Image 1 (cartoon, protein in one colour):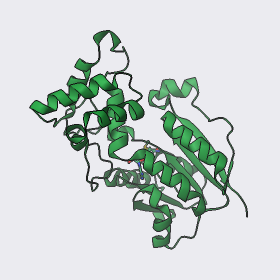
Image 2 (cartoon, protein in one colour):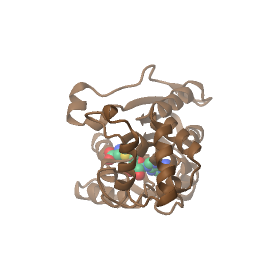
Image 3 (tube, protein in one colour):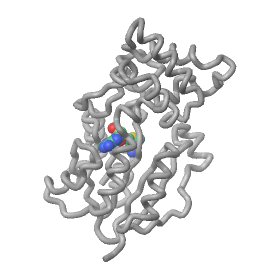
Image 4 (cartoon, helix red, strand yellow):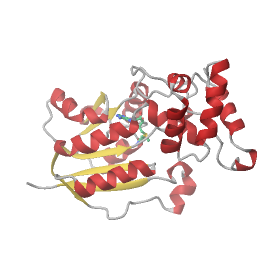
Amino acid sequence: MDGTTGMAGHSAAMLKACPDIRLLCLDWDAESLDKARDRLGQEGLAGTRVLFVQGNFCDLPEILEGEGIDMVDGILLDLGISSYQLDSSDRGFSFLRDAPLDMRMDRFSSVTAADMVNGLPEENLANLIYEYGEERWSRRIARAIAARRRELPFQTTLDLAHVIAQAVPRRFHGRHLHPATRTFQALRIAVNMEMDNLRNALNRLPACLSPKGRFCVISFHSLEDRMVKDTFRSHALLQNLTKKPITPSDVEISANPRSRSAKLRVAMRIDH
Ligand SMILES: C[S@@+](CC[C@H](N)C(=O)[O-])C[C@H]1O[C@@H](n2cnc3c(N)ncnc32)[C@H](O)[C@@H]1O
């Protein structure tokens, strides 16, 4: 199962490398799944080998049951959002494009980034920005947001990005990192409950694997990587196969800078 199909880069690679596998392609985002279907179709890789399902990867046990599948031999989760989602002009993930403050991967879920930015108590907002964004200026940013929303609620990405940039002292504006980067990341993680989804998936998905089946997770955030590492070392059904995470080479990072913080860990379902 590719639990985070996105633009089907990994799915295509797996289907090409292993001509006799069948692949369950899952994504929460219906729009991304349509694109993946088109891409795999164009490359002649879709056909009967691939089953596309829109859903949350932590619901895999129910999804497999619904599809009449007992087990899968491998699970891949490549966490976060895709470049396609980040660059889509109307989704609200990017502080570089003006859009409604949305950030929901699943457009049927109810809470948007605007709801959080305009509704959360200042202290909760500060904690969220600190924890999920690892942002040292979290308190100042939350204060600035709270002051501005008393006058006028936030509606758009650029409006929020501007207020954040003003809250961060100028001399700390990095040359490569926009001052709103970490806050936007934190909001995205909170809106989509990414930590809860990962925690649930790590607990529930090993039971969906066949004996010796592999569980592979690529994470981009230190909190996520810690969760993956701890589960792979302690879950009763898993044996950890990667003592240290596998990270991209310098060549890969220069070809794809967004891979720079990726960490891949792999575990195997114990055979009993
Ligand atoms: C980093 S991208 C994956 C890119 C993909 N590996 C590729 O090759 O194009 C992450 C994808 O996971 C999806 N996603 C995030 N959380 C999810 C969840 N809980 N359940 C299912 N899909 C999820 C996002 O919608 C996004 O398309």
